[in-house]
Image 1 (cartoon, helix red, strand yellow):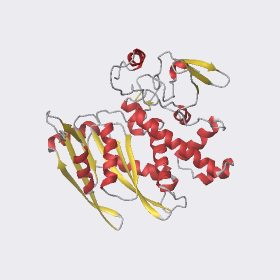
Image 2 (cartoon, rainbow, N blue to C red):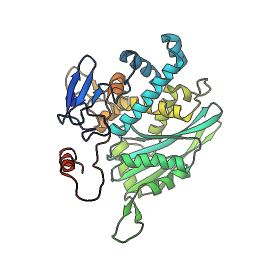
Image 3 (tube, rainbow, N blue to C red):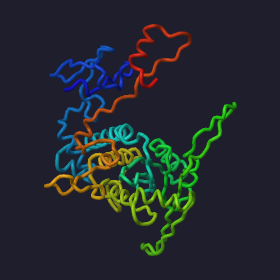
Image 4 (cartoon, rainbow, N blue to C red):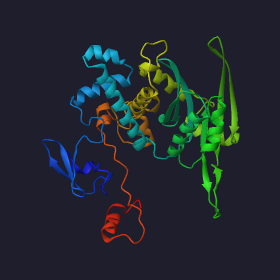
Amino acid sequence: MDPATVCCPNLACPARGQTGEGNMRLHSRKDQRFLCTECHKTCSATQGTALYRLRTAAETVSLVVTLLAHGCPPHAIVAALGFDERTVTHWRARGGVHGQAVQEHLVEPPRDLGQGQADEIRVKTQGGMVWMALAMMISTRLGRAGEGSEHRDMPLMRRLLERVRRCAAYRPLLCCTDGLRAYVRAIRETLRDPERPGAHGRPRLRPWRHVGIAQVVKRSTQGRVVDVERRLVDGTPARVETLRRRSQGDGVSNTAAIERLNATCRERLASLTRRGRARARRTLTLQHGMYLLGTVDNVCTPPASLRRTAPRAGMRWVQRTPAMAAGSTDHGWSVRALLSSHVPPPRWTPPTQRGRPSHALTCLIERWCGDHG
């Protein structure tokens, strides 16, 4: 138990979300609790993780979540380990919620994407149909965003592109999608910044510069692809080719990486299996499974395409996860480390008030808001 690695989770504390500031002390090693010297509140060592207030051992929960993240149906876990089905479903939901928090904290900070691909998956549910839209960074195989909806329409694409926009730095970007028209409009309307010339009123939205859009349209006959058409919607051919070679290497514009991610989702999510009996009842269940699988794939699973030749003798390859290739972490995680990771709450912001702030509030601002406001 290292107090320097945890932060205060109290939302009313000025020191919330900050580690290594000296405000956390060890309160009880037996009960695994810490004490914040700023707000004088205690917190559990597992608060802010997926294991908070669970009575089952962490090894058992990690084993069940690992099986769920690799395609084992819940009823098989119930039959093999003897847990109640509602318990397994609850652990999967916890893993999905925590995976989304880790994804937003660790993976979604803006960076130069280079090239991104997006695609959708058609999922059958009990009594309906759901579409899952996914987007990924090609150079690192890092899954960047995911959204679900009952309709394959413009609002779904806009929500997906909004998440991609939060992940993308203002750099040249190539977007490769299928032939769905909603992608082109969503990309053009989302990748824009307000221009403030100083006049009153609503500012104009200026599109990002050097954004290329390429579409790959496949035509099939009797279940077989007979023709592939590649369209350049936005951008010059030279710049699009430069961005593609920089992130993908040799070849042509394609959506192979995102389609491989779709195949992984269908393999590892029991509710996505075609002609299966483990269909989901709610869209929220698919969202939990999507984020659980995506986070495990980003920080725990090293793909063969990212391995590098070992720099030392005696080692043939160096395995890298997508998060390692993107620089988000320097080592591969286990599923237990993922479930035990602390996601800090947003930092404290001083309250807005009229007049001059008090001396005590000024001291708190100088102490805890020196680097962000």
